[in-house]
Length: 150
Image 1 (cartoon, rainbow, N blue to C red):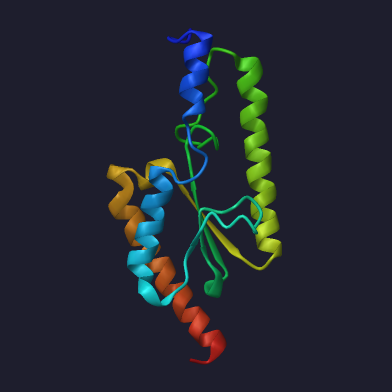
Image 2 (image 1 turned 30 degrees about the vertical axis):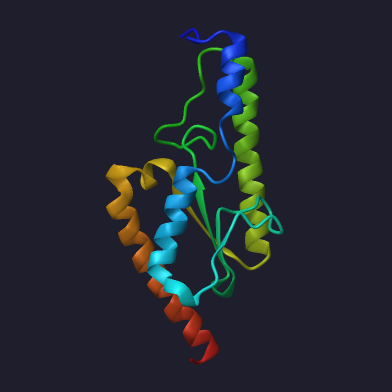
């Protein structure tokens, strides 16, 4: 399929896509904040960590990622655009390699890495994702209390 925009308009549209502070990242952060409450430090886009993860709970050694379906090649929704494949194929493959390297580096630093896709944080998937987060965070908090004895 041919792009509906000319080169200049497409460039303008793409330049407006943010790399952090996106709607899905904020939604994930708000869900984690609601589930953990105010007694836990929760950081956003910590640039001191590999890949500047979307949500970090340092005391739980936990990183939670909100990955967009297009740029991170979601197995359910990710696809290479038909136009300009010579650009998009290596670009998206590079994103996948970089994501994998960041997750490995975070695990090497002792963090658990949880990943949610954009579609998990959209309206249809919100209730299910909230329930998954609630269950996993509760388990993580209990494990951390058992490790510290309190």
